[in-house]
Structure formats: C-alpha cells, structure tokens
Length: 314
Image (spheres, rainbow, N blue to C red):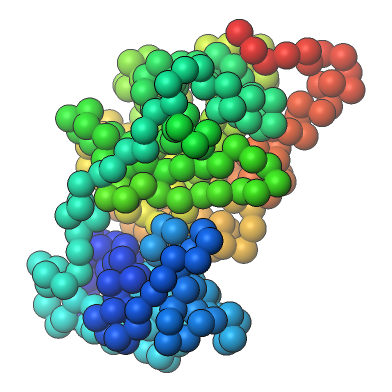
C-alpha cells in the first residue's frame, strides 16, 4: 500500500498525547516544560506534543510513526496501517488534522519589544533592520512573558502557526502555540522577492534570519536579504514545504540549509531526494558550524577582530 505525502505528513503530525491515550491508554501530566506519563514516569513528551523520549529505554523520536517503528518493531507500512488504516486517504477521524484546533496566539507585550530585540540582535547577531522589518510585517513579536513569537500565515494572510522562543540564554524555552498548523511555516517572503524562483529552507526562524544577515554582511548591502525567499520547517518535516510549494508555483529550485548535525544531514538527504523526484532542482548548502546562527556568530567575531563590526542596530 502506497500513501501520498499529505497522508504521511498528517500521520507524522499526530498529537502524541492523543495517540498515547487512544492506543496505549497512557495519561500525562504537565511537569515543567514537558508532559510526563503517569503509567511510565520515564516517558515524556515535549511541549510541541510531537517530540517524545523514553528515558529508561534511551529511545526518542518525533511523532507516532517514529514511536511505533522504534518501540514496537513495526515497519513503515505496518505503522502507517495502524495509524490511518488500509486506505491511503482520507484520514480517519481519530487522527486530528493540524488545523482542527483554532490557533491561540500569546498576548503581545504592551510596550517596546526590548527583550526580543536584545536577544535577536545582541545575543544572536541578527541585523537590526531585518528584525524591525519582520516586526512591522507582523511575522514576529514579543509576548507578555518576554518570549519571541514567530508567526506563520496562510494564503489569506491569517495567522495559522506560532512558535515561541525564550529570551533567557541560561534557561532555553521552545514551544508551539496551541492549535498551530505546521503546514504554514514562518517565512521571510515580501513583495521584493515574490517573483524569485529559488527558495532557501531552514529548520528554524532564527536560522532564516541568520542566513539573511550573512547575505547582508557578505554584500555590504542592508537590503540584499530581500532578494531571496526563506522558509522555516520548524524541524525536518516536509509538511510546511509541501504547503508552501502548493501556494507558490513559481518556485523551481530548492536550497536545503538544515542543521549540520546527524538529524539535519539525514533530513536534508531525505528532502532532496523527495523533491528531486518531483522535478525540482535541489541544492544542499549546509552551514560550516552546527547551524547558520553559529556561522553568523563566527562571522561577527571575525569582523570584531578586524575592527569592521560595531553595531547592527538601525
């Protein structure tokens, strides 16, 4: 039985708490920044409700397919049959569509986004003009708890996805807002680059912004980043990329810029094969360090050493 990409991605995006409740009769309670299983205390699920780890077994993964294959010894087709049945479409009602729940955006901060700006500009080295532009475009903001909120929009310019990033470097926090639809990833499109045929693809919004800053540094042009399209997948799943390409048929070349770690390299190879078979031109442009923010911070330190970097604020 062959399953189309949409069905596979829906299965990969199954809410793990709902999955465990239905198939395993497990229940969970919130403990800190994760959910802990009452029946098996060493089993945890992250706030994104997709990433899981079974500490006593030293096994972890992302999504129900991973869980069934790694802990139950199932093959891909057997795991898919358990999740969606023998028919490839439509999805049965017990698998919740990412868009089934309304998106709940965190409340915006009342005043200046000082913590957002300091974290992205000073800690992460991102160009101040890029930060301000994305704030003005309502693609990012600071919530009342001081977290950065990265927003993804649908084809009608309605917010459909939001990921949160903490601004305390000694206590990192990451989570997706309730009701986030991972088909609509954070992107940096604007009127200047809509006609471009190439798309740069990253795991996170910060890597998108870091790559844009590196382009500015390389060219010496504060607006050079506007010449390209950039998309964050929110991980290594192709879900957001499939939706983006469905809505942007002018894209013909995909440049994969995922993290330079085992998961990123494996995801890059898989995505390049998948979309190469769909007649897209594909390139792989991995960062020199772990990710493009590492590369940006390295570039910043070299510029400081040569007295060429003073401040990236406007």
